[in-house]
Length: 188
Image 1 (tube, one colour):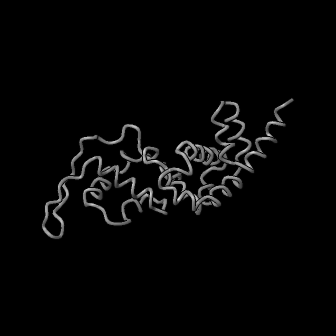
Image 2 (image 1 turned 45 degrees about the vertical axis):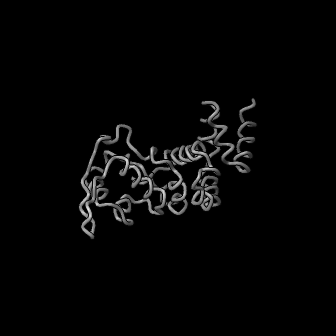
């Protein structure tokens, strides 16, 4: 029976090359089930995220980890969360921020999202210059910047951290849930 031997080999691979094991899980449904259900553990994922947090934080050009590899790490965390429940977040809170910062904005967005033709007027600045309009492109850019640079995972930090146009605050106060998924930071 080759199954136990496969598990031994995959466990050894995960210890040496965790991303390699996760990428191998993307090749077939049976490997995916085996890797995500029996090979991925809290300790191995936590160790990987802790050892690579500096790399995730500084991988601004996405050269060190591809979006596909980041997505595999998300899947691994979500699989562990299914097994261990919401208490898992408190164990990982110290190492999740760099992974979340490296995550593309589209992962956090709801599928239908918001109307693309929104135009929220910005008030004049402190020098009296007209503020213009806050558009959907501005919304995406503002959320992207906040989620990329924030080391905080709590939704209120999206609204309260840093300088941004008043239009963003108005948009977020009126429509945070239609733009972002409800569980977008693994903690809701």
